[in-house]
Picture (cartoon, rainbow, N blue to C red):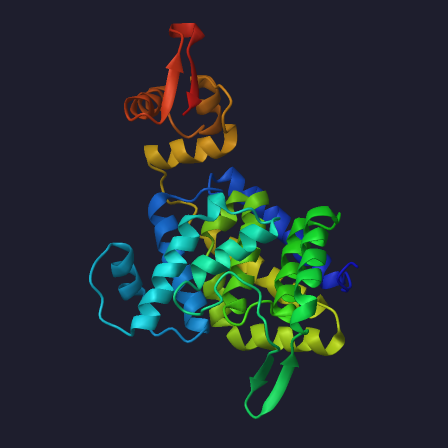
Length: 318
């Protein structure tokens, strides 16, 4: 069964604006942001997602952990950060449309934090806010069928991927398949779904914007629960996505290094052969001499292989 929601005028307007911004991102070569920006945004993502769940470590402490420096702090918080780093480092190997991959990611994310990491919960749970029971999750015997249906929708429905990513996020939170870690998994998996279609989302700090509007995040989840459909949550998440793209475009004058250009071009040509002219056509702001230096650097550092000579020269990523 297809998860229930309505297409509102607000959703259509947000989809149009997001599509326009993605085009601008691609034109500015920001679909794979510069190296330093990617690192900074990844740290912000991990910090914000875990802070939402009560983690007390600062951005500076998380940076130190990434750099293998010693950090003093609660053992649980440090383990949460290390687990999150491990998962985000493996995004390329995770399949957003595969349930086993989904469980594998949870296993990494919650390793050492819960005994059932990577496995569906085996008991009933309810979400309490204050003194009230805000949400009773479906019973454990329904979890596998519900998750199978949700992944079937994700893989086979003709909805736009922007909408499907939001629907999946909400429905997964509603199903609450794990004993713990559902919030961070919902946010992680939406990023993975979006990244598969638009590489720029791998390094967009969507989580930090959710953290800034955390009250609205939970409010939109609650309203969607009350109405029995994810419409309100879809609108909220599309607003977050649009804002994150606008934030990225605000720094579009950041200069790309030769390494940035080489990494970016790989995401465009993948394993196909290409010429220096094709490389230069993609980066019209650089000279032909700079293009030659970029490719020479990539060959010498074992990133690409070179075949032919002079006019017959072709390249391919290893």
